[in-house]
Length: 345
Length: 206
Figure 1 (cartoon, rainbow over the protein chains, first blue to last red):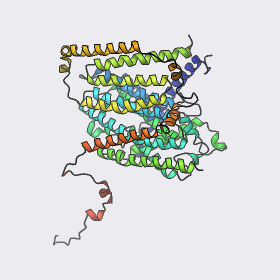
Figure 2 (tube, rainbow over the protein chains, first blue to last red; figure 1 turned 180 degrees about the horizontal axis):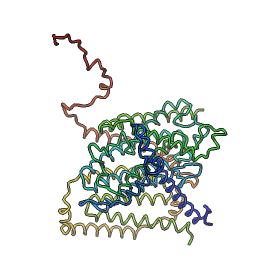
Figure 3 (cartoon, rainbow over the protein chains, first blue to last red; figure 1 turned 135 degrees about the vertical axis):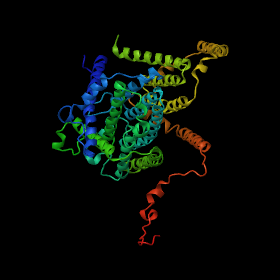
Figure 4 (cartoon, helix red, strand yellow; figure 1 turned 90 degrees about the vertical axis):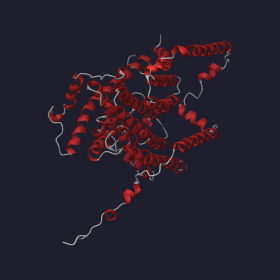
């Protein structure tokens, strides 16, 4: 009764357990992903990075967490207190609930929605509010300018992300994320990003466009203008301290890992092994998923270390004048491919 | 009571109650930014009601379009207004008679309408099965939208395109004498175009 999905009680219990599992695994892996980010960044700059707390600095994130949690929460005078506190919670909640539709292995998903991708787009458009409200409620010019920049940037790049996703939807013929992954089964030559077919000439550039847009969407370098420390101090986060700041940061990193998972699901075949034969299929699907997502995160970290920051007008030009026309053209090409080549075959 | 009946019922009353409470917040909040926030929460509750009815596609589109785009623009505009909050609070008594009259008329109209409204006997059946049960509603909507109503949706697209072009034309003007970055000229520029190497003889100068 308690663990039987056909009854309402069992379904509720199992869903709650799944949610708990996702949250715990995500938070713990986030601690090490944060460390990996700093380590990779340090290695590129020939530094050692955090190496004091625990062996190789493995416990650094936990030390940081304790430090964040124990500091005093400072709420500056003149802030809109309710919204000031609400904003980081909103940011974190939106980052977490987006994971509800992400399938990490066959059946390992909290909610297998038919409109999974639309759900992700809707939630990511809600994520903007945490930032803009935090920036506005701080009652500081730096925060407000940072929030406006960030919002404009996220809205701009969401458009091209939307069109890139449409190309994948057309090929997979479904908005359900599990079905999109299933459509890429049977070896790496079926993955949309690197498929061995003429459509790759369109889809490989689309994967690059999605990757770069994901950098901009998550405010990562080279598009970290909202936080540009040389001009805006730290953008919308200036007035935040202690646990409230920590919530913003966890939300930001959760979104980054979500984007890595999205690249994995849409272009790299999700949980599928690269070759469908014995030694590769022994490894459980969830490890393949994690491996691909972490590889994408490695690329995110390398970009942070290597590429200098964009100027704001260049960022807008890239989003609206380069990526948008390219991705719209790709939608036309892919739909023509689906109708005239796949349809007639 | 059975959980399978109880959970959707609880969810419905939570979303419906929240929608009404937030809608009241929109008109009663003193701070316009809070008004917009209440409006966003109202949209969000309405999307929750759509999900309960099994119209998840409409719910997602509602959130993406209204909450993700329209309300952000509202918020931008309202946040950048230069508002004197003290002045806003005055004048409540001046507007009370007119506002009270308007709302009284609207309430009477609603009551008259509600009392004389006759619900068809077949309405309930139509409501329960708007689409085939086995079909997800994304497919169901698109099969109607792009077959029977194809010309209407194209006409709607055309109207939106005209409106978009109109908005661009209205706000687009070029200032004379503004330096603009020409990316292709910058990329095409070579060292020979910008730097001239001169072999200067000692004691002569250029």
